[in-house]
Structure formats: C-alpha cells, structure tokens
Length: 217
Ligand code: AP5
Image (tube, rainbow, N blue to C red):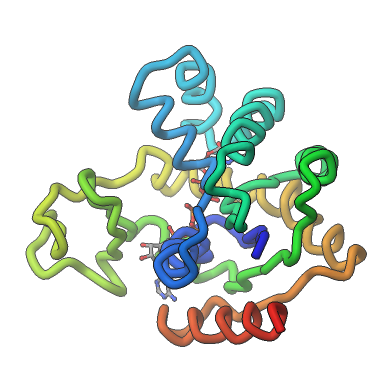
C-alpha cells in the first residue's frame, strides 16, 4: 500500500502511522522526523531547516524533495510506504506524482484525518515524546504513568520546540493556506478517503484499517 497521510498539525498522523507500520510492516516516511533528525545532527540541511521550523513555516521545497526522493528509493519502500507530513503544498504533490511515476510506484490512497480545529491546540501543547524510543504521550489525553518518563523504555520525555502556542498558531495558518488544498487535489484524482480523527486512537485505527483492507481487495 502506497499511502499519503493528510491532516492538520496534531491530527494524529504520526500516532496512526506508527500503528500501521507495526501492523503492515511498511515504512513511515515523516518529513518532520527526517528534518528534526537533521537538526539534531547539526547537518547543513538541518541548520537551514531549523529557522523555518521554529517559525512554524514550511521548509523550502528544494530541501524536502531531495530528502524524500532519497528515502523513497531505498529498498524497503518497494512494498509500500506511508508518507506522513508530505506533501505539504500543491508543488510538492505534483513533484511527488512525477517522482512516483518515474519509479513506477503510483499512490494508492490519500487518507485525510479530519479533526476539528479547536481540538488541535490542546493536542499539540500537551504532546510529549520519548527521546529514546519515540513513543508519544499527551499530558491531557494519554499521560505517561510517571511524569516525564516513558512507560515503554523509561526514557526521558520532551516537548517539541515548535509545540509552543504561538508557533502552533502559525503552523495551523500555514496548514489552512498551503496544505488543506491537497484534499481537493487528491479528491480530483479519485484517491481521497477521509476518516474522523476524533475518538479513541484504537477506534480511529480500526476505521483506517477497514479502508485499507477494502482498498487492497
Ligand atoms: P511535522 O513534524 O510534519 O508536524 P505536523 O504536520 O505539524 O504534524 P504533527 O507531528 O505536529 O502532528 P500529527 O498529526 O503527527 O499528530 P500526532 O500523532 O503527533 O512538521 C513539523 C515542521 O517540519 C513543519 O512545521 C515544517 O516546518 C517542517 N516540515 C515537515 N514536513 C515538511 C514538508 N513536507 N515541507 C516543508 N516543511 C516541512 O499527535 C499529536 C498529539 O495528539 C499527541 O500528543 C498524541 O498523543 C495526541 N493524539 C493523537 N491521536 C489522538 C486522539 N485520537 N485523541 C486524543 N489525542 C490524540
């Protein structure tokens, strides 16, 4: 299954993508995670990206497209992939179509996680992530048993630099202006499905699996 995850910041794309990786054994390609790794390593690309990320703006397409192309050409993507946080605007979507057509791997599905805007701020300000294993928590909805420590591995939990209220507002603005139009883009291509992203993580996951299984048959 070759899948694009759409949805506003905080809609739960990363949470659901990780569950799909476990169930279907296909890789999650998160441009946000790839960029954060480059920032942490202090590479030239990471240094360039950080300023944009801290402002809640999109990193230039030229930076992101090269990164995605390189990742998609790795062997583990041949059986499918989940693109999480990419594409983010129409230019990226068109570039992705071109890339995948050259690789002879057209997209099967664009899955939009639909969450009311009012819920997103709380999800994002409350998000905490484990430094060691990447497990995600939320201080309001799904806190760890011991504050600041991961239930799975005991690692330290951190808050993302861009999960500050002011930066979140900017990210949501950028989403509305640049990313939301992709719902129409994929709808016109006939590969869009929308799922409600409210309710329990399990319920949403089950709805997603039902769609994927219907698509596969
Ligand atoms: P990125 O890392 O992609 O962030 P995002 O799109 O803003 O998405 P998030 O990771 O914030 O949210 P999510 O939908 O994955 O939600 P999650 O599952 O974590 O991008 C960051 C930055 O990198 C961008 O601003 C940009 O600068 C740059 N960038 C990235 N890709 C780019 C690109 N292609 N082009 C240009 N720039 C790019 O869940 C959020 C919280 O909610 C968690 O705490 C979780 O536990 C909780 N939660 C999840 N589901 C539920 C539920 N059902 N009920 C209650 N809580 C829930």
